[in-house]
Length: 328
Ligand SMILES: Cc1cc2nc3c(=O)[nH]c(=O)nc-3n(C[C@H](O)[C@H](O)[C@H](O)COP(=O)(O)O)c2cc1C
Image 1 (spheres, rainbow, N blue to C red):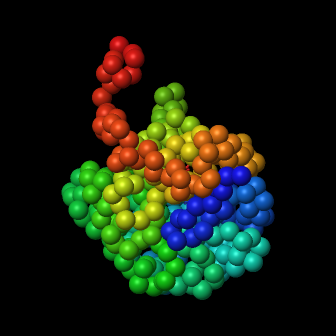
Image 2 (spheres, helix red, strand yellow):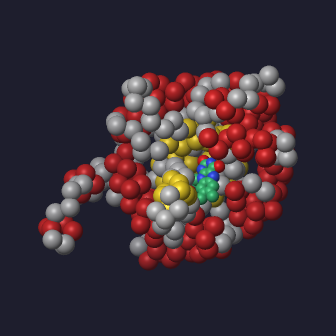
């Protein structure tokens, strides 16, 4: 029978399916359910760096200007008191004593400020790793790309000074030099990189003239953007990749592993179809491995990476041409 285990950031996972950070991973009850459905690991719902700074430094000025995420102010004023840092550490401790799969803590951050010391508490509570969801929207036309990029390295270095557990960077594709950035991040000492985070995006209601929320959940088609970059980067970078965005079934997991990911992270499909999807995805991977006589995941992880495929140019092709798309 196929062995689905994989190694991600030095952690042993019983299979490559990780429940991504989301509201679904914020309670012990759900963590237990996700575990029961067979997930390989769980990334807890993220704390905001502002939330931690608020608690670390009670004199932290609460003006709106101090909040880098517009949603953070609301979140903190309505939520923090009920769900403070101690609750987060309690969740880590309880999760660790209830389930025996890796528990990865997560922080949304935009600067290397006071909050970084909290990483030590996360480690002491027993988290197996820390994932840093770093995103600075490059919206300020006066700031050059290297100024934005520097922040990533400052954050990662500061956190890695605090802890011994593996650290991962969860990033977006908003970089003009994405390959070079990913390469440099992988040299910084991180053990994993999550490609890619998916963000809340605004939409416009054309009758009410209001800014609204676009689709909160991904579609299965979004998987291919990640696939291209996993395939192009997996041979080059020096840390493990977890693929994320648009992974909705076992076939999509297999594709990401073939491209070179060590694991995948899923959220939308769990919201839309329930935690049983984890078990169904595992089964699909197992059936496929048996069909192709792969005994272990290492037999096929990276087999379709940029370096391994016959025509790597296929991953670089970007313009539609009739010859490739079949459509005029
Ligand atoms: C409702 C919701 C809440 C999320 N919250 C977080 C979060 O707190 N931290 C984070 O790093 N990612 C968060 N994400 C992003 C997911 O972890 C994941 O990277 C993204 O949704 C892409 O995966 P998917 O296509 O399987 O949904 C959230 C996603 C959703 C849908």
